[in-house]
Amino acid sequence: MARRIERPYQEIGALAHLGVAVRMNGETFANGLRLLEQAVALAESHGWADDPIEGAPAHAFLGSELVCLGRFEEAELHLVRAERALAREGAHLTELVVRYAWGMLRFGQGRLEDALAAFRQTERMKALLSEDVTIDPRGRIVQVRARMGETAPARAALDELGPKECDSAFGRIAVAQIHLVEDSPEQAVDVLAPVIEGASEVSWQVDPRMESIEALLYDAAARDKLGEARAAEASLERALELAEPEGIILPFAFAPVQGLLKRHPRHGTAHASLLSQILDVLAGSSPASRAEAAPMLDELSEAELRVVRYLPSNLTASEIASELVVSANPVRTHMRHIYAKLDAH
View 1 (cartoon, rainbow, N blue to C red):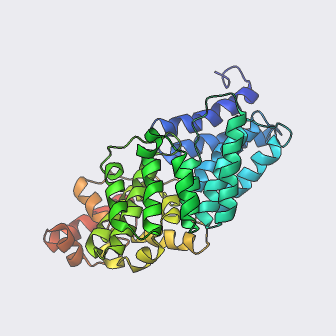
View 2: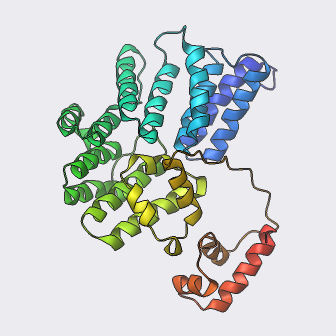
View 3: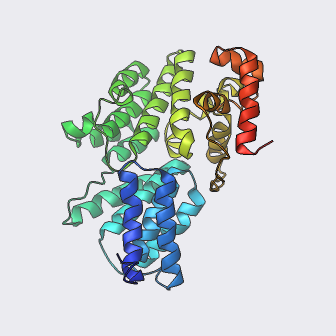
């Protein structure tokens, strides 16, 4: 409506909030990013990028989304812009989003003191707002404290959560982090089971896939500590499978799985490309933004989709066939069709 009546100032705000709404409604990161990037571009074109009412939310929401994809440098630029726009506003819901996003960013970068400070600021700011705010940094405070080895303060922070929060996905993941630091991997596996099975309530703050991926990664770390190598690899592979379609990277930076990722066999994964990208991000690089794909000449079949996941690995056609429990000739045929449909060599 704002576009139709040529009100760009209102259109920017609508695009920014729609970018968040579509993601909360289960749509892809790509759809959300497209809307948020439109909002930022429109604000820039009118000189409103530093406006606290319209420009700030566009930058804040876009920065938050980029953090989830491991695009930390880009995210930081947008969060700085949002912060600058909000400098004269005081306590504000958008500033709460920015503070929480900074905490997530610093946690992902391994800057734990900075992450803890940002999450505490979020908690203090939330108490100042009269609005009913569902962003809740307390579970992350528990995780960061535990990762820092401060298990007593972590447990004290955990005690401040109510029974409902402790039983939620983010609460159980926080508890699992404590169990891992206290060298109780069996308890970590038990507490994560309802999250992995989908029986725990998820929070709106993140895509439900994010919490599923994170739970699987903590489960992999716990099983690795228990010496259950195959189970650890299976959980890690499931996490990679959930993360790959949209390139979700942030949960891999939270969970203590860097060693496990490095040991994960490249020839035994269907997600070698994403695995390499995650390791690059954990080493301090930024992933390239995903270019919009050209349309396929023809849709891939289900059989071809099963094969295409193995192509970034070093497996031969015969080895892929063995993984799929089929003969090699159909796999070679599928590969020829895949290259033709994607117009790729």
